Each structure stands twice: as C-alpha cells, then as structure tokens.
Image: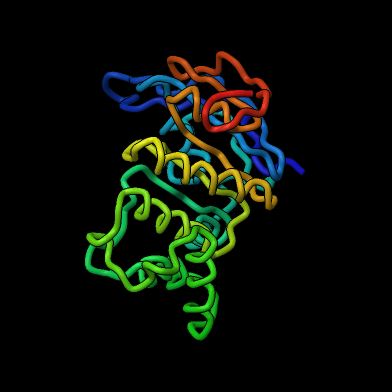
Length: 235
C-alpha cells in the first residue's frame, strides 16, 4: 500500500524578493512498512522535504499525498490530528521539557489525542519499555545521557502508535555507541511493520535503511535499494 506519494514537488522560499529554491521536481512514493533514508549534504533540501512530508510546511508546486490526501484536504485542526495520531517525529535536539519526568514527557502527545486520560500512563509506560528505559521513568532530562534522551524522544513519538516515524538526524548529537542503540531501535520498529523515514548526511547510517534517496541541490540524484548491512558497515 502506498502511503506517501510526491509528484514534481518544489519549494521556493522568499519568492517575492530573492527566491531560494530548496526543492525542485521531487517525485517518489513510499510503501507501507518501508525503511527509507533520505540523505545528502547540508543545504541539499533534506529538512525542507521532511517538513513537507510531515505536513509541517506546504510545497510551492507539485502534489504531495499522505494516505491519498493532500494538506489542502484538511482543516488546521484535522492536520494537527493527523500529525498527532498518524505521524511520529524524532529530532536531533530531543525537544524534551527540562523539568518534567520521562513519563510526563512521553505522555505529552496524548494530551492532544482522543485517548482517555485513564490510559495515558499505561500507554506511556509501554512506549518507554519498548525503548529500554523503564528504569529512568521518574528521572528528568538533566539526569539522562544523550542516548537516553533520544530514546525518550522515540518513546514520545511512538506513544500514539503512529503509522510512520520521521527521524531527522536522530544520532547527530550522540557518540557512536549511543547512535548504534538508536539505529537498532529504529530497525526494530521497522521489523515490527512500522514505516520509517530517516533523514541523515551519514552514509553508514543510510546504509542501514532498505532504500536510500540521495538529494543534491534540492533534486533527487539517486533512489536505490540497499544491500543489508550491520552497524559496522559490513555486509
């Protein structure tokens, strides 16, 4: 089943003054259950593309469908519901509330969901357990390592059981060991049937995905299936 479809998508910033072309003629589709890495150097358009995929921004041209619906098919309230219930986001900067426990951080998306409050603790604890940090459930972010903070961010992204997880440079602030743990978690999520879209500039991380789309200067330069590798980069 195709869940993402882009047809000749473009994005231009500052069109009324000095235009900056961020994306041009981007076309590809994503099937349910895929693990895709979108990679390229800084300024290649990766983050802009992620924002469009996550309904955080609108394309300037072309067509983007998520489960066969475009951003214009929704009201602002419905868009927020789609992002909350069908999409999970993991960012390089963690974006955790500093004086709030792991449990309360992971529960945050549930505040805006239709899930009864009586189930929030149960769902949050399940997500926390899935990323292996149940022993830190009462700790605050200042008491956690970088890898643990990112695992909290992943748990928060999973708490509403989204169909797709967007991970934007999720290992960018981590050492190689912690980064390997995070990639293992993303692989496991994909093995369980969840669609994963990873944004990265690192070739060794992209090779862990099952498909790699490379961007340069806002355009797709290649779109290839990968040969399965381990975290040491060996086939």
